[in-house]
Image 1 (cartoon, rainbow, N blue to C red):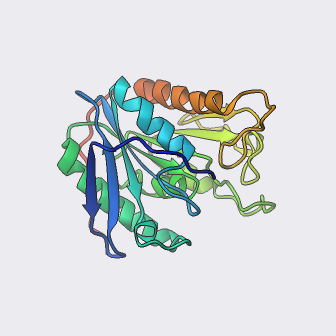
Image 2: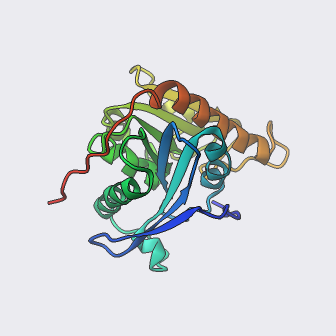
Length: 236
């Protein structure tokens, strides 16, 4: 996943977690109708192209965006820690976000790849009104029998999956479509990093436009309807 220049955050908040400090990059919106809390994948940071695109565009449309940098990334490590540590840190980030945006703004959780999985696993606990799964790794490459579809089914809220057409961790046709809480958007020709071929059906800018427009329409339609107080359960 290539990285790109991220817009300057309005607030940068250090987040204490049991696994070291994380960091929230908050892009504020005036009178937000929702706030999106999203984290990065296991091989990159909050400067991933899709996260940057969301942070650049959504605040101007009334949706605040908080990008969460996991503790392993803040510490300068190159390899992500175990999934349970990511979930604990993500919950801590949601609690810290309350201090910035308050408790009366609907919370949408999300992320890309490993961050999408973490958002799915914690959405119910956080009382999220929606879950945005970018490049959800439905299975390891070449191992479709190792399905993670139960994580998608367990969110307890409406969920939007944005998937590249050529994603080796789950092509769009591999996802079941048999439950009404799941919405789906496909980026033509894109891989797991949502990168498209130079001579593909869409340009890279157009691909990011698909991501942003799908997320915006879905959040406004499905996830921004009612205010939800962020109630964070204590970790064992």
